Length: 268
Image (tube, rainbow, N blue to C red; front, top):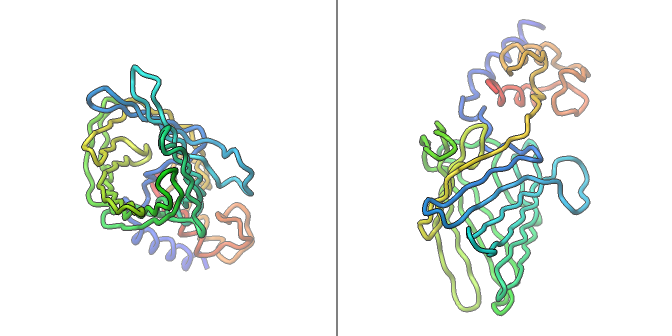
């Protein structure tokens, strides 16, 4: 039995790439990222918070994005209700402030849309689609196609980040008076998150500071500080058992799903 389970572990190691093992969107509540435009005129603050509304389980987060015009009181806030699980990050709702004229819009996603897939790598594509009501405009539909188009090193005031994924965001907005399209870009650094953003108006924001909550490593079963082949071998050695120490997803049995979870986090 030991030989077979060690073989399973070795096979999983061979098929899980370094890129897929990286976490490009840390999701701990309390994480904060601050970006400023290269012309010094605007600031964007991203924070992950506990949702105000009641939600079952501990997998929900509110991503709050505040955009400010520096030196003025002008600011708007967009909030995203997201769920974090083995399927990645799922988007349940967006509440967007559109200013004094157009008010606030809300988009509900049912079923929830993909915010970020579980594994990010060059060539990955996902889409979102939503509909909302906007004051003075009426019904507005918004769709976006997201594609990881490159891996690049990014230099920012907060430091240099290697192997960042560049995501192209193609957005189409349709209302009664017509439709418009825009293209923006976002860069995510491994184990850091957002480090750069370029709007459809070619305004570039760069990371100036960030604060990430120290995170536990649930797949480091032997608690040696790193997720490696030893953790994978331990889980594999209890394959088919009801062992809570090796049951990574808590479904009551140690199976291939538990092995995959550890394998996807190797090196973290």
